[in-house]
Image 1 (cartoon, rainbow, N blue to C red):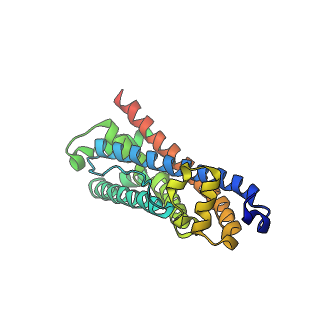
Image 2 (image 1 turned 90 degrees about the vertical axis):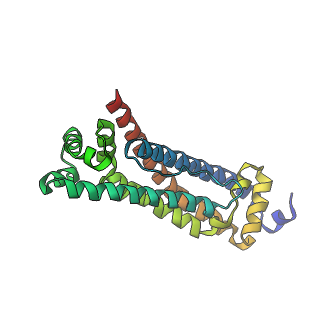
Length: 225
């Protein structure tokens, strides 16, 4: 038994808990990186964007990796805003309002976008129209992506932010020591509570984000058949 275990008898249980929470956090981060790169690929291929893919910084901190995703998502939102502004400029007001109407059928929205997408992109494809409909002014951009950014920013600013990602591949004791080096021992319980709180929000936001991107890619595949 480690000397600290005599002072903090709950440490053995906390080691197990920290190990579990760390790996869950890594899984969520990895999923968010993968989903973002899928979305970047779709935008580059079908909307003519020139966004760079992102990669997890293995020797960086949790905050640094959260910031990488946040910056990429903000660039994605800028590109989608450009498309939205172009659609608003090229479409009649009544048709543009239909794109914002959640009651309007998706096939009808795609047909509307198809009327002007060639003017915006220089070419017209049903896949490009589908991507625009799925992403521009939809709940994906106004709700799901914004929620992910908010949660990532909160995690980066929390006690967890300074912990290195690299420790996630280490054994339980090594992870525990790394966290003890990142936070005061008296803050350890608070750090674990922080993990638990943020993971609930992060898992929910990450799963919705991943599901939304999968829905977009599946729609594109269907349009290209």
